[in-house]
Length: 352
Ligand code: NAD
Ligand code: DAU
Image 1: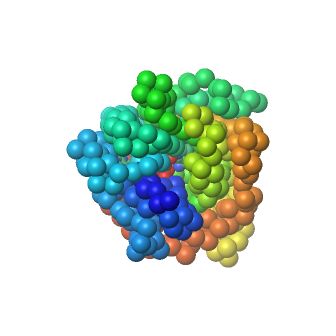
Image 2 (image 1 turned 90 degrees about the vertical axis):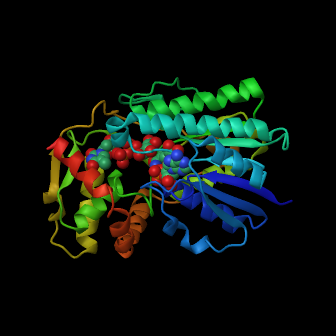
């Protein structure tokens, strides 16, 4: 039977991979991508599916209730997979209110529309794509799992924790069927080059300094973006997942400085530069305020109940990622040409 699935934030990094997967794998679904097209949203990310007969795009700001309501009225959806968000921690430190508006108010608007939609579609499903940052910071040892208490430490993670709480509250209060997944750091093609991996790739390419916060000792758990969207697809289609939470991660912890070294070495090789030349670009800069030390996910619930596992090693994923950025320098130049330059200069100057 034909289903209509709303995907919010589908022009962003993870959202564009998810839209592409759903459009291609499920020709019977009508995939409606709603996105405000902020600096982080780019329809070029979806060029290969933009003319597909089962795909529609609408430029919508989820903070605007009238726009949200009209999308639900016009498309009568069966489910929503909600990814639209302000997603960058450094920006949340500079301007927390933008995060409150989109991540909290925008999510509550969608939840209100979803509750109204239950009158037409009693099994309407609200899937919230969230982050492991809601759990706070880990010391050595220990992993986040579905039972870890919330302890958000940045304005970004506080806004995502708040939206998770609203989703569960609507499930409890209005019997809205929901799913939440909390994923670790993603990497891969189409990631906006303000995030660590694409920022380093693009600055190594341009022979520019590589700003490593603090001593570079913070640890992140990296996952190939297509493995994240494969997990979302699997969870979304599992009837037993409704009302549950899943933590998603690739058991792939790295200190930031080790990743930057690896990227430098891989790129020296690919660009035929003398060994060690990119490492000379590394500049240790002032640390991020309130910088979480370590994130690490225990994905065993997802692995054991739904059989998910990552498809690529980190080395394979990094090779693919670097090759994509080298082949798509026009994309990088276009997405970074607007307000991003001012943002980066402001950030960089405040750290040096
Ligand atoms: P992104 O910044 O690349 O994309 C966000 C998208 O949301 C953009 O297309 C943007 O235009 C859109 N958007 C922003 N504000 C909007 C608004 N008011 N109305 C409609 N659209 C709006 O983000 P991403 O890295 O792809 O992350 C997607 C989701 O996944 C977020 O909810 C994020 O919290 C979560 N997440 C991200 C990661 C990661 O490593 N990137 C990990 C775990 C969870
Ligand atoms: O854990 C999931 C989260 O991962 C997502 O919810 C967020 O949306 C996503 O942005 C990401 O957050 P991080 O803050 O971990 O990612 P970021 O790429 O900004 O930074 C990764 C690490 O690298 C972090 O410890 C800070 C450091 N860093 C980052 C930048 C941009 C640097 O040392 N230098 C930099 O220039």
